[in-house]
Image (cartoon, rainbow, N blue to C red; front, side):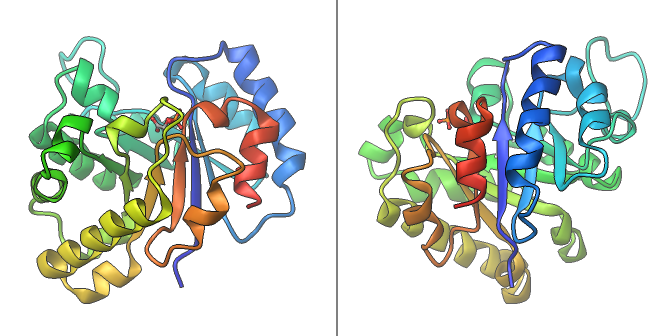
Length: 249
Ligand code: PGA
C-alpha cells in the first residue's frame, strides 16, 4: 500500500556535468523499476540540467532545501515555486546538516514544509537524534519535539505530500547504520505519534524513510522492517552502481 521511496541526497558534491553524467548512467540501471519511487537531489546549480536529463524517465528530482517565501528581498534564498519551475517534484527539508550548521529549527522546518506543499512539492521532512541524545535516552523525546514542531498545523489532506525521513545523526556519513531493530523501533514510534496527532489513516499512508549509512548490503534488512518505507541515501547515492543497487533492493 505504501510505495517505497528511495532518495539520493547528493549534498555539496558534483558539478553540473558530473550530475548529468550520474543520472545518465543511473537511468538504464533503474529503468525497469516501477515499484519504487526514485528521487535524486542535486545541488541547486545542477537542477535545471538534471531535470532535462531525467525527462521521460522514472527518476524524480528534489531540492536539498527551500525557503518559505514566494519572492521578495531575501538574498540567496530559493522559493519552492522556483524549484518547481526548475523541475523539482520533491524538497528535502530540515536535514540534520542544515539543523547543525545553518541554524535550521523546527519552526523554520515547519514554515518550509508548508511552503513546499503549497507550491505542489512533496516535502521530505528529516528528523533524528544525536549520539548524546540517544545515549541519554532522549531519542523519543527529541523525535516527538521535531515532529510536533515541524508538522505543526499541517492539514490531514496535506499528508499525501509529506514523507518523513528518520536519520539518526550518529549514523550519517559514519558508516554506522542503525540496526534494523533500532530503526524499526523509531519508525514505529513515529507512526504511532503521527496517528495520535493526525489520525490513524494519515499514519497508515505515511511513508517513513530511514537514512544514515544506507548501502547496497544493508538496504534489504532495513526494507523488510514493517515501518520502513524507503531510504534517504547520502554517500552511496554518488555512484550510479551503488545507488541503483539500493533502488533495486
Ligand atoms: P549517508 O547520508 O548515507 O552518507 O550516511 C545520509 C543523509 O545524510 O541523508
